[in-house]
Image (cartoon, rainbow, N blue to C red; front, side, top):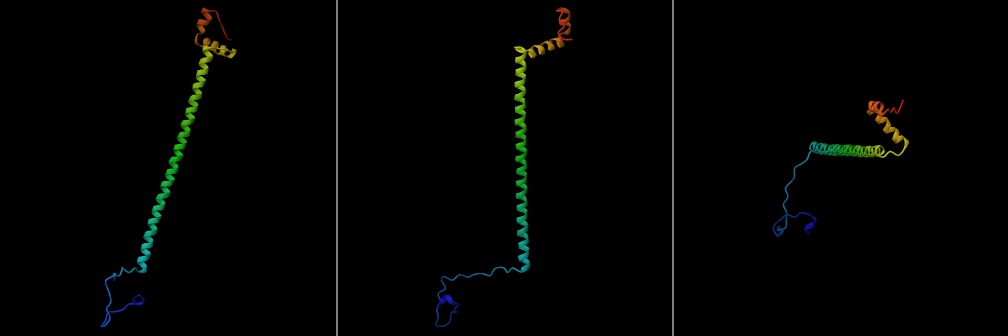
Amino acid sequence: MREFGTQMERVGISIDTRQDKETQPKMYFTSEMWEERREEASLYIQRMMRGYHGWKRVDGLRKEKKAKEEEQERMEEEFRKNEEIKHKQEIERRMHPRTKEDFDILYEELEVKFPFHLKHRFGMVLFH
């Protein structure tokens, strides 16, 4: 019954040692060494977590900045399109006037640009 304890070889007892494993004692840890190792491990974990939270925050700020820039670009594009539409409408109003307001705008522009020509050459005074 070898599993229940150790048996020393002696006269009359032969022990098979072919599957035996020899082990070496490991280094002994004192309580101070254990505390030092725990302190190092906790500092390492704190460093890694602080770095993780820092990168996470920076990534959030980058995403926020990118979203703001995209919103600004979208608003500028919308404003530019609206201005372009207004410009085309103004050109259309001047090229093909249909309402009284369209004609009034044209007469005002004529009077501002060519007051001398309208007054002296054509005898026209449009507004007083």
